[in-house]
Length: 366
Length: 247
Image (cartoon, rainbow over all chains, first blue to last red; front, side):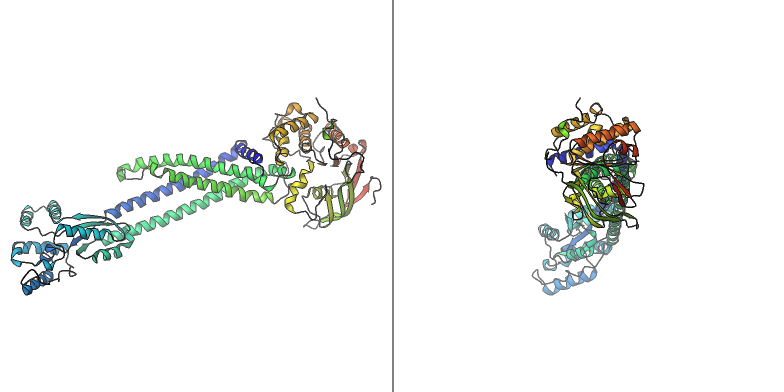
C-alpha cells in the first residue's frame, strides 16, 4: 500500500469516528464500562495485596542467641547440663557445649526461671565455653548470617540491654524489673521479618540452623492465614479480571458487528470500485484502535474519580492506608491502552472478515 | 462549462483504425446456484470494445447473474469468461480488485456514501488506485463538470435528486477512465425524463470509445436509443441484434 494511501485511510478512519458518532459513542461507552470494572478490580486486588504485604512485614520472628543468659536462664535441663560441664572441667577451658541445640523452652519458662535464679548467677560460674555468643559484636555477626539467608526481608538486632528495656516497657511490675536490672536475663536477639510468608517453615528452619541461634519464636498461624488470604485474593483477582476481559471482548465485538452491519454498503462500494481487502480493512482498524485509545484515556479518568470517592469513604476505616492512585496511574493506563487497542483491533478485524468474504452484490442500499 | 463531449473520455490507448477486439467473451458459460437454480445455460457471446449493449429480459431471466459473472461477484460453473483480457475462470481472488479497476460500475440504487460529499464519493474511487491528491482534485472536478454537477461538489448525496445522485454514481464510474462501464438498471430509480438524460450521457461516453453494458427493463429506452440488444430468457440468450450473432 502506498504511503499516501496510508495517510488517506488513516484520515478516513479518524473521520468516520465522527461520521458514525452514535456507534462510536456506543463503542466507547461499552469499553469504558468494561475497563472501569477491570481497573477497579485491579486496584482492589492491589490494595488487598498491599495490606497483606504490610501484615507480612509486621509478622515478626523473634530470634534469641545462644549467649550466657540463654544458658543461665534456660530450662532446667539446659542449666543442669551447663553446670555439669562447668563442674567437670573446673576451669574456663572446659568443653561444655550442651546448651546449643537443646532450646525448646518457651518465653514463660525463661521468665519463671529468671525469677528463681537471678540471685545466684555468680555462684554458678558458667564457663564461656558453654555458650557460643560472648559479646555484642558476635551477636551482630549472627544477625549478618541470618540476613544472608534466602527470603529474609529485614533483620533488626536487639541487644540484651535493649531487650530488657523493651521488657520493662511491657511489664508493669516495677519491683520485678528493678530486680532484673541487677543481672540482665535477656539474651541478645533479633527481630526478623520474611519476604514471602508462604515459605515460612523452610525459612524458620534455616534461621534455626544458623550457628549461635538459640530460640526462635514465631506466630505460625498468622503467617498461614496471611498466605491463604493472599492466594485467595490473587487467584480471585486474576479470574475476575479475566472474566471481565472476556465480557469486554464479547460486548465490543457485538458493538463492532452492529457498526459493520451499518456500514456494509460502504464495504460493498469499496469492493465494487476495486479496493483490496487491506485497503478496506485499514480505516476500520484505525477506527478501532482510535476508539480503544480514547476509551482508555476516558476510563483512566472515570477510575480515578471512582477510586477517589472510594478512598475518601474508606479513609476513616483504613487510616489512609490505601495505595495512592498516582502510584498505579501509568500501570492502569497501560492496561487500558492494551485492552482498548486489542479490543478495537481484534474486534474490527474479526467482524470485517465476515463481510470481506462476500463480493459486493449482497450489499444493497436500504 | 465543459461538456461530456470533450476528448477527455477518449481512451488514450485505443487505436483509431484497428478493428475492435473483444472486451467481454462468454464461452459456453453455465451458472447453477447452490439452491439448484440454473441461472445461465451454455451462454456464448462476444462484446467488442466500443460497443453499447442493452441487456434485457424478464425477472429471473439471468441478467443479474450475467452482470455478476462479468464483475466476478460470482464464478461460472463451466465455460470461460474473458473480461478486459482477464480470464475469470483462472483468475486468483486477489486479482479481482485489479479487474474491477478496469471497469466502472453504475448501480440502480446509486450506492453513494451518505456521510461523504459528492466530491469525496467520486474521489474515493481514485484513492483506491493510490492516485495523488493533485491528480484526484483535477480529475474529480473534470468529471463532475462533465456530468453537470460541477456546482454540487460540496453537497451530500441526500441533498440531491435521484437523477443527480445517479450522475454522481456515473461520475464515480468514469473517474478512473475505465474501458468498460457496467450499468445495472441505472434508470430504475429515476423519472422517465432523467432516464433519457442518463442514457444520453452514457451514449455520449460510448461515442468516445468506452464500452457500455447496460441492463434495463425499460423498452422505451431500448427502442429510442439504437444500440445492440441482447435478450435473455430462462438463462439463455434468445435474441441478439449484433452483426453475425449466432444463436
